[in-house]
Structure formats: C-alpha cells, structure tokens
Image (cartoon, rainbow, N blue to C red):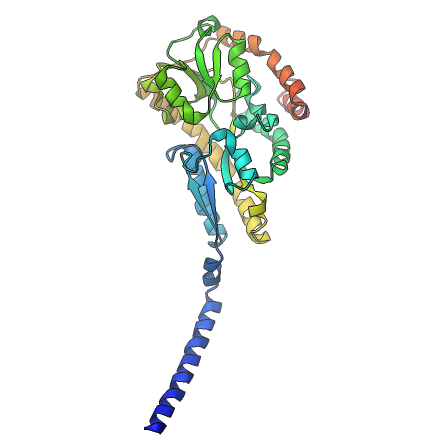
Length: 344
C-alpha cells in the first residue's frame, strides 16, 4: 500500500510537471494569450448619434485598429454625448485626460484655439477640392495646436457643405434679415450677422430644443445634421449656400498614446492615413443621401441665384481679412492656399 501510494504520488508529480510544461509551451505558441492580458482599452467620445456617418467612420476605424494591433488596442466609440461632454468641451477633455480619444468638431474649439476655425471663414472654400488644398496648408498648423493641447491627430474628415435651413424660402439676402438662426461657431456668427440675421451660438446638443421652443427659426449646418435633427419637423427649406466648411478631427491624448508600443503607434498612424480618403468619400455621399432624405421628409432644396450669391460674398468679404488679423497664425497658410487655387 505504501509503495502503491508512493508510486501514485510520484506519477502524479511527473504528470503535473508534464502538464505544466505543456501549458508553458502552449502559451509560447499562442502569443495572443499574453496580448489579451495586456490589452489597452480606450473610449472615443463623440456627440453625434450612432447613425451619423462620422460615428460610423469612428466605429469602422476602431474595428480596423483592433485588427492591425492584434487585439492590443481596443477602442469603444461612445456616441450621442453619452460620456457627458458637449462638443466645445472635447479638445479640453482629451487634453486633460478625461477621455483618451474624441471626435472633435474643429470650429467649436475656437474659444480655446481660434486657428481651428479657419475652414469656417465665410466663402473661403467653395468645394471639396478646394478644401483638400486648404488642408494641405492648414493641417500642419492644426497638428501644432493638437500638440500644444497634449494630443495627436489621427485623421480628419470634413462635414459636407453648409446650408441655411429655414422656415421661409429666401431668394434675396434681404429676405434673411432678422431671422433668428442657430450657428455653431464665431465665424458663422459673424457671417450671419453681416447679412442681417440674428445669430445664436448654440452647441448641437441644444439645437433641437431651441428649434422646438421657437428660440431660433433656422439653423446653419450640413444636410447630414439636418437629417440627424429631423429638421422637416420644424423647417421647410434648406438653402445651398456653401458658405462654410468644418471638419471632425479624431485625436488621442498623448499620455495614453505614449503607452502604446512604437510598432502599434506606427500601425495606427498608417491605418488612419489609409482610411482617411475613404472617410472623405463617405462624407460626400452622406451629403447627397441626406439632401434626398430632407426632401423626402418634406423640405425643399433652394439653390440661390448667382445674384444672391454675389451679394452674400460681397457683404462678408471683409471677414477674411479680419480673421487673418485676429488669428495671426492663419495668414501664412491661407495665403499659400489662395495662391495655389489662383485666388490670391
């Protein structure tokens, strides 16, 4: 009995040893085990709803990041402002590490960084090709702003062109006089004031309540936001003035970024550069699809006459010079851009 128990114990020890050695071999053969235990998880905050194309872009990017890092980095998109941050607060929230990542609307950050309002200068950009040319010159300056705010830009995607969504059909600039309109930033505020409207600077999250209460009778925004807000429930016309542009900028807090390995940083940066053109194409398609949805909802698209557009540009022409004087860092990239498109 004693011998049998001793033999059994000896066999058990050898068996345990073999199992332990096998487990160690298995761990070495499957490095994903080690990776899974050290997975970095980041939230990405955005105020836009799940259905918005910018949010969809963020989710697709998050899926691809997980793949290219072998699961070492997982990004969870928190849409609809569910983390409690309003649009204008996102630059500071990432800067201070309150959230690792955010999809930031550049023109809403002008209170902290005026340069981020450059795309919103009235009629500076007339179409997507011109916007690409502007980005070539302004993006390096945006990256300096990001670095100054303890973050790194991963990618930038424009909103479609801006419309004036109104209760009335305006066929002259004078018809806009006195209309209370929601605007997203100071440039839009200056523009609408210059043409005789009564602007109210309101974050997106407060726009629908403002419409519902009658605090405003119009909104300056894209067709995509018009669909997000179901503007057909409040407004009747959307005017294709192409008066301003803006972009969402996905950034990451630098303290969080530095915790990734160099290899994973490189993989994420390369992925962002690869996906950005795809996201731009999504933006252009979103404008077409959203304009169609607005008309299906009962709104009417108004294409301003050449005379009205000339009048709009004339009444706001001084705003570009005023902007460059107010935001000195914008002058060099803007002039380089205007020279490139031969509008200097």
